Image 1: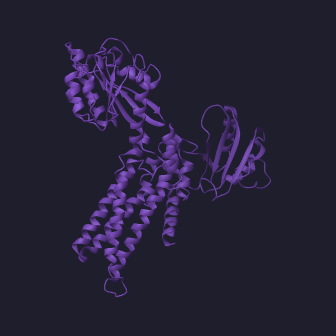
Image 2: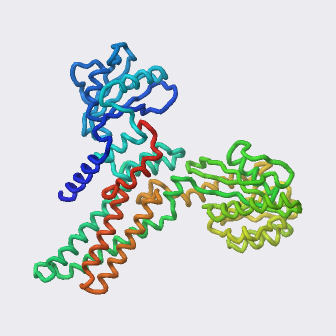
Image 3: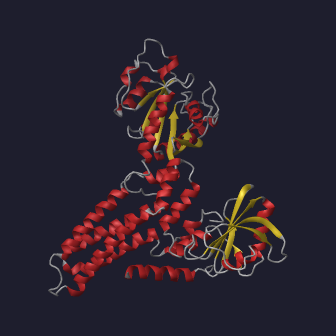
Length: 501
């Protein structure tokens, strides 16, 4: 009870600090442009006056019930539109304040007239980006992780992103972090009791050892959460995939197949792609940012040589930062029998260099490894009958022809499996980390916990310092959920919100 009271006190204090907390704000919440129905939201202490004025109600309507009314301009009395009026009295509303929603026809003139009428009422002003959600946060209706989940849900473009964002918005991540906060708070209370009443015989024997065991278990949970392979962050921002290979190996052709459109120029002449071409895709519900890099080759022209040098440098950066590299090889140029490539070891890359003279950029190949590389042997339709291709069960090598589309379906299946491994299942197990901000605070929390354990091992003389480390750990988790120091990150959280949300 005391903890909840402190949280409410903190939230109330922070709300009082907001310069806009006493204002009533309004905005179009259904997005810009022509539409069948537009939703205009009003929130704040004057919301009840708004619905009485525009909706011409004699008394406040039944809460959360849609009522069809003639909406009138409060100054001229002219009818603006026939629409639905809905009254949401606080605290049972999205923002926790008194709210009103007007559902009107989505024509530009209708929306403009309603907004102009609202701006003419005293005490009302147009909402800033994220204003409604910020009020929900400050009134305790949402915490920071739920706010971030809502923002991600608004920006979600793929099914996996939607599932992850919805789970976070529902509070799954918040529950996990709040559980850790409660565990830290209980441990801190026990350590404080040891400090204050260490010599009292009423203190349970072995209490400090019990606290250490609990903290060690918590530390393992946090470390496991941190070591998630960045799956949640990949889903949120997109899995980075880079296509690399020699000129004319088929990189642009493969990109066009994945994009299902001519995203890159394809020609029989080497060096068509001179720089990185980037496309955002939805592959099997997973967000993918795929980059087609320039072909790596030797030239004599000094100007072209400098251009290729710069392109190679950008290619190196893409290879190093990519979650998955697709190395595409012209199989028709291989000198030896292709069955020797059936090997799931990283040594297959060295074999490619020796077998295929077109794969010559060793500086790039050195950065490729078995875990984040998928090899695509292209132009199988040009192979002589003497070459044999043994089936590959390692999912390291795919045999395709971008011209005849043979093997493309199998390649797409392998690619989807790789993406699922990299992005994970957003609904499985515990929720994933989705923000670098979370990771930063959890790493600091983990360091504080380790320092606490180190202090305890040194002896009772360091128990006061150890308690401070627990406070620091608790504070770091509080910064994730918004239980402490929230004002310093509000601008970061809300900068990507749209007006009306």
